[in-house]
Image (cartoon, rainbow, N blue to C red; front, side):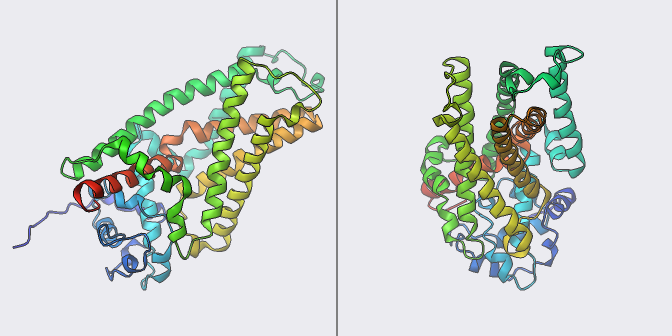
Length: 379
């Protein structure tokens, strides 16, 4: 006799997944077409059919600990061929969005970032923080006449040591919170796997080549053009982070001597190149999302706002650099402030937004591959 299982549907989970892009979840009638056409699914770890039925039944605890959810790369072959239009790719994207909310610490931040209503308040709050910082530095009148700032001097507008100190301190705190969430996720996968788990570090190292090369994207059919865009965004973002780190280092310890070629020093060349890569990559993704909605998928709020925020960070960053070359003072300082607001939003809220998918996907893929090697099958 088959084992019986009592299912207690989590209605809030179902509603959240549907709100985050999986609104057609209920159309699935378990024909298994999605698993058959998916090039990333395998006989050892078949998805997304299993995940679709668990989502319909509201089996939250099973799904948030299912590494197969992270093996899906939104190729959308499943959604294209689904005879009922259930869009399994979007359902799995909705499940991933729920994971950010569920494992984020503190928990209320995940729900806050998942709501469009919170966005204006968060951006206004960060903007207000910078004005308060300016007030603290320069006094009630900000200590200078903006009309006298004939040159675009960002350090005069907001001293780097203040901005960088706030940035680094905030990042240290938020990444500590993020680490707690990531470890909770790994622990939940282990618990769901009968208390068995592969070695975390070794498993992560084993999947890094696939993650860096985006090898699984090349197995996609319907959505394969995303490969180039994702590579541009990935390496553009890495380049921008390296640029920021080098700028902080040289500003604090080894100041670069000003010269006629200062705007074209290697650090700025790397920054400009990275900015262009980010702009082009996000433009490709946004334009395809708007013109080929059904083919691209992942149209939930979390997916969209993450993409637009990266685009705004890259565009305002490039404008900050270009306006400095033109010496349009007031405009330069305004754009600089806007750029900082988007940067702080993107990084300070990382654990609760789609930005965290890089780590969750890495952990999910590592657990699945490591568990396959240790148990002979994927979890």
